[in-house]
Image 1 (cartoon, protein in one colour):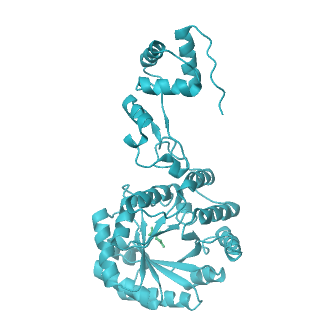
Image 2 (image 1 turned 30 degrees about the vertical axis):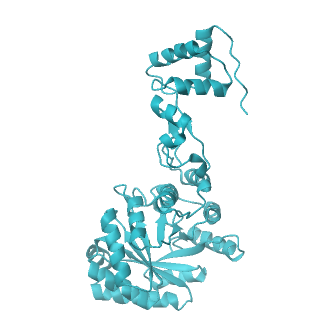
Image 3 (image 1 turned 90 degrees about the horizontal axis):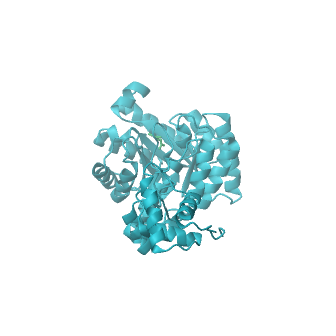
Length: 382
Ligand code: AKG
């Protein structure tokens, strides 16, 4: 099994409502994504606006100087003018997209199936004449008649595309269908590689991306924090963790995920929910007494991914769910010695305050002083 990541934070990610990256931010994100080790960076659609054009220009300078190692992809409609704009930036690859479902053919392109095939072929050949690699993306591929999709993919390959993107544009796929779709495409359209671009409308983007890889896709499109149109596409942190633990493949440096997530959270202005997988504040935080007692004995009781893999550490919450183990551990960490009986008394007070959401260390010390009648000095933090 072979798989890499295309990071589309700068293209699909900027299509999130309310998100606009500056040129400097675009360059910083691209540099960081290259350091993190993604195979490809979709750096934007340069015909859309001057700042995207300028961003790609600066990214390509770093690429030429060897500071960015990931392949740089420029996005393009199946329109010659778009291809020319991307080609003049000397990107490694131009990604040309065209909606191929009946809905897209009729409502957007006003084209017959045959007309669509000839546009696809002509524009790909035109891009190839600029000496650049080409990915063709079949937009809305997952609502496209399968036999026609095969025709589209063969046409794109024969015109010179070495990768075909299968876009689940409306997020309608389901994992078993995804696997079947990709294995059938791989069987019927040889000598080309496939990408999966999965939207997350019902939360299945990660599952569909994994299923696509099982079916033979070799590149997964992802964005940091799952940004993208509507509710976004496959989140990088989730899919990278899943590929690591289910397929045993390190697609990127997992211990840099927290840093990229925080960077993109800052530049996008889209806050990271605390209960978000891998990079949310609560991803490695435990609460119930039984859980905390378990992880204090052996973290594997309630974790299958060690937080250290992601450059993080585990923690637990103190509230009415807390048990004695957690409380003893917390006071030990604070360097405060309490007898068994004192711990029981502190715990009783915590449980009596049922509406307190988090007992901080200062709150615990205050309760402990009240219970013991002693002035307690915690060990200064390291
Ligand atoms: C979509 O259909 O949602 C896309 O953004 C496809 C574009 C591409 O992957 O090239």
